[in-house]
Length: 92
Image 1: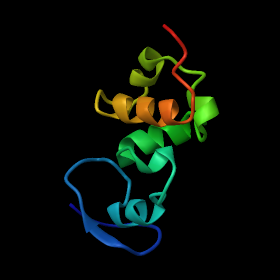
Image 2 (image 1 turned 90 degrees about the vertical axis):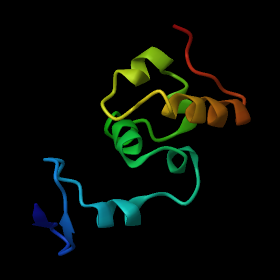
Image 3 (image 1 turned 90 degrees about the horizontal axis):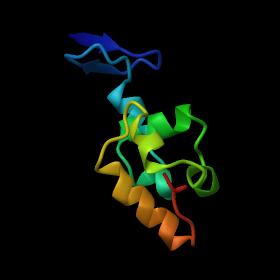
Image 4 (image 1 turned 180 degrees about the vertical axis):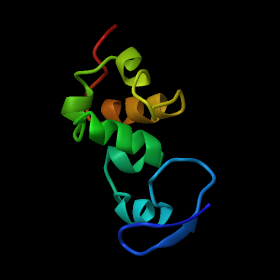
């Protein structure tokens, strides 16, 4: 299905997901832990208000996996980012 986002980008998408891939690519952070994960995982974290490693460390892996957009491949990346900064997920 051909679509146009609110910023005027034209794109084709077969799913009902309303996210414009052009806008999402421009929104991707260049550094920080949010740059390590996929766009769906990044949106899931942002929508949950998790925008810093200290906020991330307040969650368990199980809690994060319940967020729509966070998958098993995101957890090791997030765990490594936490470890590099002397942090860890909250224990289950």
